[in-house]
Image 1 (cartoon, rainbow, N blue to C red):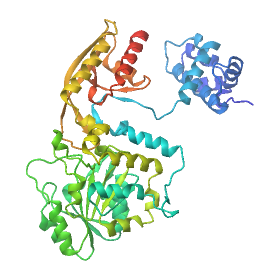
Image 2: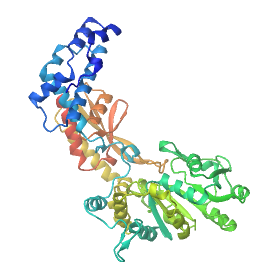
Image 3: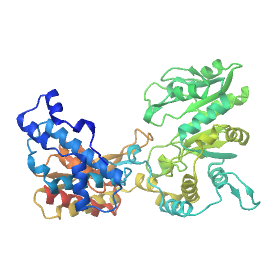
Image 4: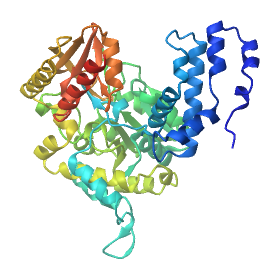
Length: 490
């Protein structure tokens, strides 16, 4: 079979169409075809058990990269690159790269605890064990073991969600955006929803409350001003077409100064007066009052439910510290109507998410256990002493590598909660800054990002910075090994 592509058949035709230097022309003419490299591979077999289609694509990618480098005038390229051993080495590297998993474990040294780009919350160990057990065996996902008939997939988390939150009923979908959309579609499709203008938030990924509302079929009615909204603003907008009063927690920003908003319990009383349900989107919900541990006060799910609000939505990851999920709790008749919405099937979560969420929720039955066993809560409330000790250990490991080119120093800084939660919260922390002679901070950052596993930090004042708050204890040795490789190779 011939794998040679048409555009490679006549290099002279290509050279006549573009302007290249004589050296480039010579190199381009020597660029081998796919069949030639494939024949070399078959004879040498540098890697075993490589799928044929992947091998051919890797050869094509390698040759395309060489062609691009030649045309770019890479001065380091010469005819030696076309030696059989060199070609096979380049193809082997490309094959290995193609066979790697795209989703990789990374070391978060950014200090952002709930880092959206790095997978948000780490699961508790008990949740990981449940994932393995449930995923590798059959389960009673939708089977009622007591009655021997088909059951509901929500049953494994509904009771414990009600127990912890104090709500009458609960259900779970794939994420909080889905929870908000499903609730609006169920409660207000074709009718009006009243929202304070100051709560029309946008979160990451361009998720905007007005856009979600429009997609749900509900009509947005804005009341108040950007910085001040009062109860009469809501009451004045109520009419026969009003289906819902909605409050959105501005968890990813904060307004200071001349501001005013309506307390949820006052809005609930207004809804009761006009027989209109009230919904609260908490965004990043939490079951623990973290102000007891030195963080800013954030209204808990329990406090929200206690106001009598009809429906509450919040995330299962972020501050809760579980898997990505959208949790809906509230009045039984309201939640039951949301469950029956046909769109619910498109948003439902799978057995893996349910297993991890149930295991995480079990930890909240004992607050002390939750604070120690849930990584997100543990990292948010690490003591200054623990952080300082960890920074000293990492600095000692790096300076102990015995290479005078590297210098590691401890730097005072502040971590972030992340995930759009507590945007004004500053978490005092210790960072380890690394400088390597003859390597810029940008080069160090690039090399750390390409290590295995990748190590993600940031740069300040031409120093590569690692915040130890989000570095796990067992990762200190991995970081030291990564720097050893950098020093050895460069």
